[in-house]
Length: 379
Image (tube, rainbow, N blue to C red; front, side, top):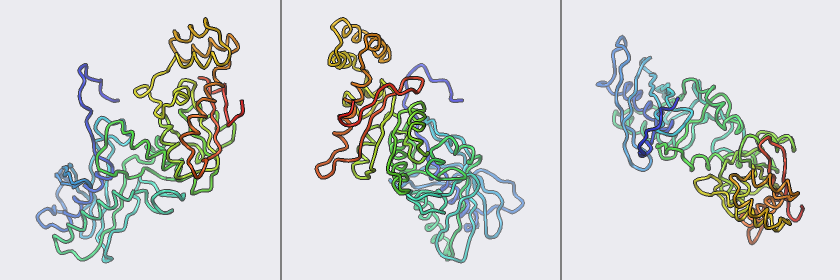
């Protein structure tokens, strides 16, 4: 359970990525194997030690690690991930590395329990590779290279990265949909977890599109939540790989598809969210855009609403109340919103040389039932 929020506002605390944690484990294990001063006695109980990790942008951070299972050629090191104030599924999880010395020069990466394996094309890693992303690989390789150079070690390393309970935690992530099976991904581009990171979410959207394209999927559906996803999945019988959970980041989908196009895109979401897109917003979160009841009233007028209904819509408490008022008067506000949203999305997708994918917009109610649709000039 997350701790209760303080009454006074404070800055959110950053954390460290799984890639940073794995690098710290590599450092601790390599030092135990190669540095005589750090090598513990075989019979000594595991004890905590602080190691330093240099992040890609130059900052150095310190992590607490424990080395155990030490032999002449291998060691196991572990640390506990601190994701700061970000609601990361791996916050508090134990990240560990089984490091082995080998005669083969270089670094070989493997998946230990809790880390997944890539099974589909479209990711930054080849099929069959451990799900350890390129930047964490580079971080671990560079730190191991420096330690080897310091202690005149001429061999190489086998690095098996794992996460305690990682297979269960992975079910709460996008990994199964992306074709990463058996566990989590070891992630990180800066080494730092930014609380409630929009960049991380957008990166997962881009990754989902890449996987779909690489596996020959021509029709993808981008949805704002679980109800809209379930509705569009049932309607088209789409596979998991064709479904992009965009949340509030419709702009991330539309802009990315300009350079990574697919043949067909379905956007599906709740009435309030899609009304924000119709009003020109590409971030649908309440912090970035509010429901514009004056605009809803104007669209209702275009559909035949009288001035009294328009005035009621302007005073509505929620978008669903505005929609209900229109339904009572047989005004199809949902269809109007879908048409306006289609026009806005089409404008973002289109380029001078290419019109972009075939586009359609769907709206669902709170029960997941379709209540509005637009595709080109269709009603």
